[in-house]
Amino acid sequence: MASRRLRAFNRWMKSKGFQWSDALEFVDTPGEGIAVRALCQLEEGDVVAKMPKEACLTTKTSGAREIIEEAGLDGHLGLAFAIMYERSLGEDSPWYGYLQLLPYQECVPIVWTLNEVNELLCGTELHQTVQEDKALIYEDWKENILPLLDSAPLKLNPKFFEIEQYFAAKSLISSRSFEIDDYHGFGMVPLADLFNHKTGSEDVHFTAMPSNYESGSDVDGSNNDEGIVKEEVALAQNSSTDMTASIDANVGNNIDSGLESSSVSGDDTSMLEMITIKDVSSGTEVFNTYGLLGNAALLHRYGFTEKDNSYDIVNIDMELVLQWCSSAFSDRHSRARVSLWRRLGYSACGSQDSEYFEISFDGEPQIELLILLHIMLLLDDAYQKLDLSVSVAGNCPESNGGTTHLNGNIFPNEVFNMSKKSLLSKRVCDALLSLADMRESLYGLNSVEDDIEALERCSLDRERKLYHSLVLRINERKILQKLRNYASQPFEINKHSSPRKKLKRTTKKKG
Image 1 (cartoon, rainbow, N blue to C red):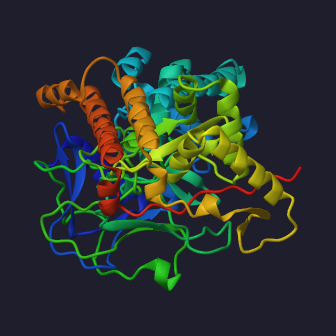
Image 2 (tube, rainbow, N blue to C red):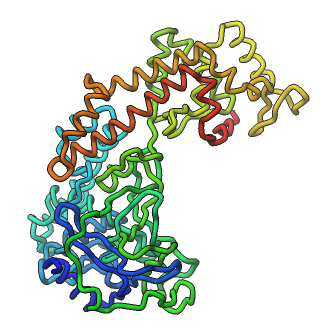
Image 3 (cartoon, rainbow, N blue to C red):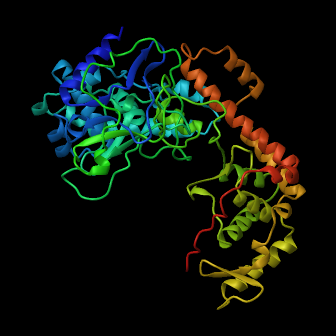
């Protein structure tokens, strides 16, 4: 028998004009949440669900629209206020049937306590990011939401707009919102957010047509957040395996699984659609995908991780590289070598305020890091020669047989003809090993073996935060071990390493 909350949601969807295929079954499993399963074979191109835009919870549809617009609450700030406002209305909210289905908050790190963040995420790619996020979210609330509570004409019930409620709303937006169109912006899309994520296993795709308030091409709606982590765009798991409760599949505003897509026919711009992008076997869970994200992004945005996630990376901050350099060389040496590296047109990821180098899932370092280490370790005579060559080449009006023209500058060919083998000298490999140890030390005293044993004892149902933080830590530390292997056996590893992106170079600024 279907759970009470699913039956209520089913009735709400019918009343709001939602349509869904009778080939879909919604299942509610204790401890795992709601998932969508195929009752029969789904064919590629089937429209399996349609959601009215006006039934989505956005800053344009909420009863708080006037308050939001007058206060200038843009983007996710405004959507968070809309969620809090509709929750404050209780059963009087037009979205009550939907809101009662949602958890109070998702278990993403921004709603963890600071002690939990510092203890569970120490050393990971998320630690500093979440600390900064929590501070920024608090400032947003203090500067934009709190003043509205003191406004007598608005008559807002303060208990629904406190900082805890704001964090809760932000967690829902992070894990469940979709980009609808240019008019509505991001919003909560009932039914579409029931499809769980699985990396690399997308079955259905969320599609939105431009609204009547705009013109343009089809909008590729996505479930994501504003400004999160250094890695970008992906997914995670959340599959339900023991599905126990289901909605009556033959009740409601059901549609044939083969209904023509309005995205193709162009008949209806007021509806959002979920369309199958491949055949789905009967009895299997139907997944959406949020992108190709590593575990840091998955945990940050959606509150879960995946073991052996091949999109995981580890970052080594420029600051850590400079710390290593300062242990062997003077500050003047470090500054001069970094300056030459930049003059050659190289850069790290991020901005100069927060630069970092990526270590891939296979343990292969970003080639810009290898080149920087190579320059750092050049003997003084070789460095002086290269520095002089770059200075002279920068003033040369045109390239010749011994130089390469790049981004408006001319550099010696030997800078660009360095093979991986020549970059991976014994000294560079020793530097990589030192950097791996320095990066590893950020996780604290416990070894990776200690973390693996802790994960084996951990219960996902009872200790979700600990479980996912351990998966993140272990996967990152395994990458660091692969980096050590890479540096210990550089030429053997290089033969089997995955291809990397081309060298990243920036245009040299003209003085």
